[in-house]
Amino acid sequence: MSDVGTDYEYLKKKILAITGVDLNAYKENQMKRRLDTLIRKHGFKDYVEYCECVRTDKDIKEEFLGYMTINVSEFYRNPDQWEFLDKTVIPELIKRFGKNLKIWSAACSTGDEPYSLVMALSRHLPLNMIKIYATDIDNQILAQAKNGIYSDKSIKGVPADLLEKYFEKVGTSYKIKDEIKSRVEFKQANLLDNNYPKGFNMIVCRNVLIYFTEEAKDNVFRRFHDSLVPNGVLFIGSTEQIVNYRDLDYSRKNSFFYERN
Image (cartoon, rainbow, N blue to C red; front, side, top):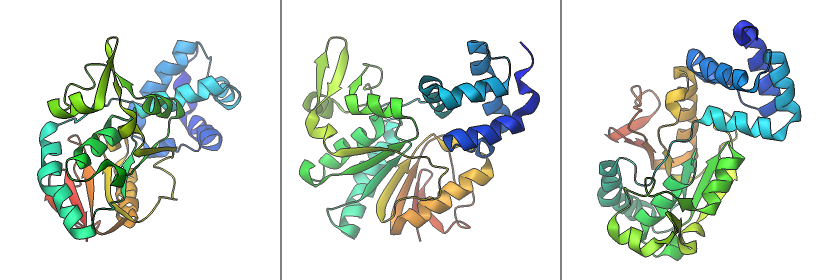
């Protein structure tokens, strides 16, 4: 096979036209290496052949979307951050905005995060008052999220009382109960699009933007700012920090929680 990396500019242009994904927003060396590996695995001779297949073959297109989003997720990932959310952030949000909180889990992957949010909120609010809006670019991943079945590794961080209350054992796996699933609305969306939903009291987007360029990250954080109401909170991952948060009009609550000014 010839070197698939001969015309990455062509690949970026075609992928944007076919899928709406702008590869310019991703760190080039990292993403190019991942995509070249994927293309070689299928035996495509070059980017032209691969792009044509992405255009015409639904499975190849879905595989591309799944491969580039790098879905690594688990319930209550980084428990100390969830404890801060439980003890400090949620009570402040309820005091500030009331009980009908509007919350968005962006790039929600297999659903671990939005379901964790429902369970965390259930310590403070009745379930019928909780609603999480959850989005991801990958439809196959969203289908898994809606299914709600997880390995013991995925659920290892769930507090014991919530595990017992909201999961049932199915063979070697764990199925999250419908009373939690029903509180999450899943939808396909691309963080690189401009049309973000508005009016949120909290946005959770964790361990996703590490794959983006600094410019793309700033654009996402600006759009999140516009999507939050004043004094709304952005919860990011342990792999990320907003170094220039003041320039983006946030105040820092701690390393992973930022408040819109």
